[in-house]
Length: 174
Image (cartoon, rainbow, N blue to C red; front, top):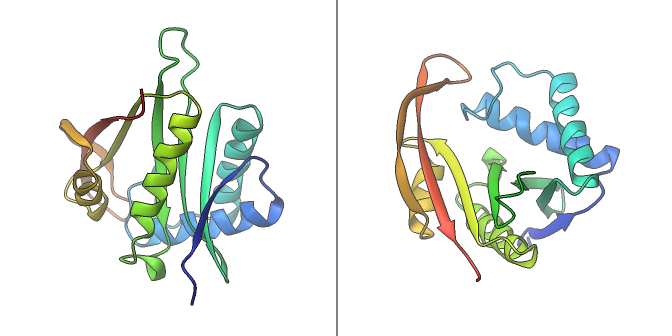
């Protein structure tokens, strides 16, 4: 099977919203603390992705997807802050990979593509947060992101319990 292709999406279709909703539901069901609690309904997941689609259309976010023959298997977003004093920065958010597609280099490919898009958009500083002790935390460190620190009990896990959050940054381009 060919490697999933990573690309930027500038207009999000209804089909893509449905596939992104399935991806989000899969990640939440698998325990990823990505804003939502388990069980996550399709309606709620699709509503979230419609909001993302609107922000993409308004130029407030960049959305990248990884696709294989079955459809979308991964995604990541760059959120561009609307503040006058931060035109150089973007927040990296919702880096998600279907559980069946993990440990195949897809997370690294999404991160590298996001850094390239950020540089193309004139951003030189990226920031993100992730669950402390997660596979994602190890990926970001391996990719050269700088760990800033940990906030204890930052959020709830999707099934139960609290989650510490680790913050990272990375300088790119410029």
